[in-house]
Length: 144
Image 1 (cartoon, rainbow, N blue to C red):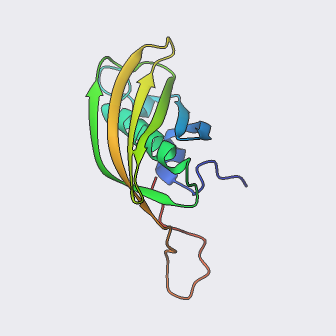
Image 2 (image 1 turned 90 degrees about the horizontal axis):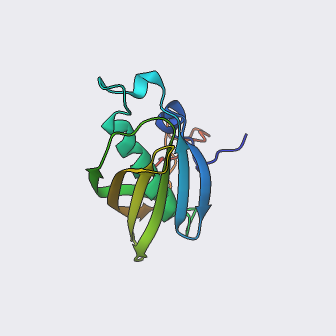
């Protein structure tokens, strides 16, 4: 079974994100929010939008070194308009050091209108085994 994000991320699977681009510091994810992902105004909940941008930025950071994981250090988000319908997140690695990635992501609605933008800083980390000692668990710390 292919794992599109390199590791299994149950929350991303629940939300239904799909990975469309993962190369050269660029990423693109698609997301079709389900009714349970909407807020009381019947638009995508801000938390779901922030998750889309977080994963989009993490994926852009990892695209230049897929064997490493990343953890979010900080994220700044601006919401410009309600996110309706199918969404696309586009991410970009702006700058990288040996241990840090500086990134940005933008969410677009089905009409191509910008809904939200974020910048984020991520720390590159080695993936470490998890689970009981001595087990042959395939789990690794998922940092996306």
